Every structure is written in C-alpha cells, then in structure tokens.
Length: 313
Image (cartoon, rainbow, N blue to C red):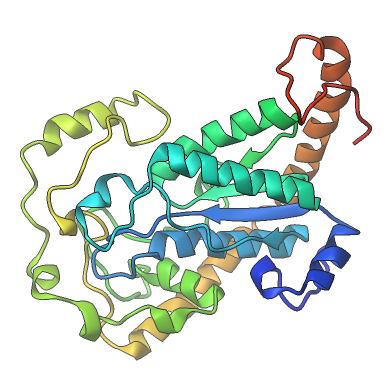
C-alpha cells in the first residue's frame, strides 16, 4: 500500500525525506523526454505526458519520481529552432550516469518511461549496458503499450487520424484533453496555452500538403522493420507535420479539457495494478544475482563495479 507523502518528486523533497523513503523502499521512476516542436503546444509537452504517467504510477507503487530529464534526441522534429538536439550517444552517456548515481544512492529498482519514440532507442541500449555492468535489471516501461495490452483504457481518448476535435463532447474526447491533464497533474496547467494565444493562421488553415517522400517513408516504417517507429531516421518537411491541430480557444476551455482528461487518466491507471510489476523486477534482480551468478558468473562481463559474486538481494 502506498504511503502518504508531501511530494514524490525528488527535486522537491528534502534530503531527510529521501533518506526516510530509502529506509523502507527503493523505487524511482524516471520520465525521459525531449524539448521539441509540437504544433501550437509547449515544446516539452510529450515529456510532461511521461512525467504525469510517472507521478500516477509512483502514487500506486510507493515510488519516487526524478523529473527534469528532458533534453534528449528529438528525431524528426530537429527542423524546428525551438527543438533542442542531443545525440543518441551523448544521451546514452548522460542517462547512464544518472542510473549509476541512483543505484549508488540506494534506488535499486529503476523504471524509465520514454516520452518520445527516439528516446526508446538509446534508453534500451542504456538499460542493457547498465545491466551488463552492474548486474542490476533496469525497467524500460512503455506505459501506453502496457495499458493497451491490459485493456485498461476507460474509453477511446481521441478520434481518427486527420479528424480534429479541439474540445470534448459527450461522444468524443478532445484531442488535447489528455495532454492538458498531464500538465494539470504536474501542477503546470498555467504553462499550457489556449488557442487565442497560439493558434496561428497555418494551424487554422488546415493540414499542410503531404511531402511526396511520405509514401515511401511510411511504407518502410509500417513494414515493421523494428519494434519502434523510427526506422529509418528522418526529418519532417514542415513544422505542422508534428503535433498539428488547433488548441481549445479559451482558458476556460483548457481548464475543462484538463479536468476531463485527468478523470480519464486516473480511471485508466486505476484499472491496472503496477505493484506486481515492481515485485517482478525485484524477483528478476534476485534471480540474476544468485542463480545466474552462481552458474555463470565466471564467464559474464566483469568490471570494477561488478565482481560477479552471488549476492543476497
């Protein structure tokens, strides 16, 4: 059962609060995102979605959240001058350093939530190499995939691709309800603009003409050549090709959409229990550091951090 805390975000906690938490538990959930163009939305909107998911899961499993890891490889949106670029290799090194610090601090169960498809590419590599180095399994958690597979969604969050619904109706959730809800959960709804502030003419005029290269590009992507949707890597040809669609017009609309979206998210997450996943992560750790180390420790990768001895986790 989750313990009531003043906050679960490590950056807002005192050191004493973190120390007290680590005396009873060792779960940290880390959203990893990007700062990139996204139509009329704030540049960090996809990251904030991941942070909101992390907060909801942390409440359920008695975990902490490490926010602020946002400036990573953005992929196709690098055409925008608001987009911050970091290479895959630099992101790999940076996130690995964070993983090592958290392990040293006492967070043995680390869960990383990608906020954007390219994030998964270097995160998976970082999780794998961290395990080889430290013999500690790290969880890469695609929250939407897990909830979808479990049938946990309360009702369809938005309409068909190409159809725009700025505000929710009795039949249809608005396109930005979940996104504004994420800002509300993260106590940042004031940072999400309304349409009167950012709906430029090109947003209101309609979707731009598709680039002639899109057809062959998406034939490759839709062929399922990888488990992620970014093979091959590419750049958009127009800023409106990512996150396009008019925002709700007024601040009152934004407040209403956020309320609807938050209800939807909380209902959805309540339908899935993440606690067994946390226990499974502990069981995997124990098995790898007892049975596997006893059988194969002499041949597995060794380094200054891991002596490959059997441990009582």
